[in-house]
Length: 319
Image (cartoon, rainbow, N blue to C red):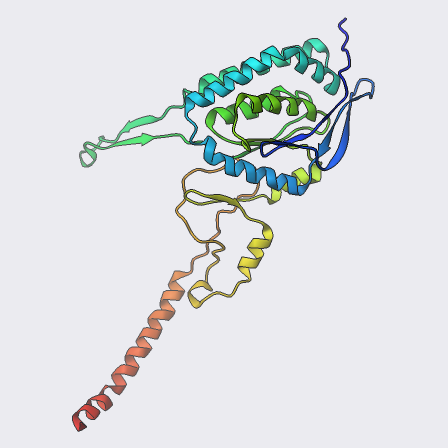
């Protein structure tokens, strides 16, 4: 029976916006086998969660323009690094999650395969050509279907497969050109942080991957309150306080019948994979009543002008 030699106890900062930060509440990670300390990390706050999402939104402008061959190169570099450090990953998982060492090694091999497969799929994202000349009116016309990265994703992972279930979310996101905020399980955050170290060294842009240990209430807030507002080329977070402030702002007569919290822009057609509540500028247009009031007002002005016309004509004739 293989035994696991304990690693030197290490303090792991979390990975946020391209930097390793030792901030927040220190947390000890203990082995479920003998309750010994495996290492320690830091638990992020709500402010850190908001910073992570802002970083992912900002970095998406870089990753969505990254060519496929570059994404493939980075993913292959991650796969090769995992293969060369497989024993380190396996022993950390065995200590942190209480896995048998043989099972942990199988999971590392599967993770190597996951990133290698994602690298191959990064250059296979294709489109479609659809001929539309089924009728005489559409002769010479065709449709083209293209696929675009969907946007930042939020990856919440469990403890039972602390490496491969993170890879199953992060690797396809990288292949497609999406950014990610990873909230690992509180029992096993160290393996996800070690994977973030490998991805950073492979050359993935700063802010495109954020690994942030959070308490469950903060993670719940991350899902339920974070909202992305999409414009044609810009994306930004909108807090509930901003929405309430905008709703209470005095409006002109033409704006009273509708709720338009932000300037309308043409949508880019890219919907996010972020599981939080998405604010798509709820717009309640009541254009008919507004036009009706303005039309009535124009009629009143016209009637007043008609009733005063004889007086005006008499004044002109008197001169």
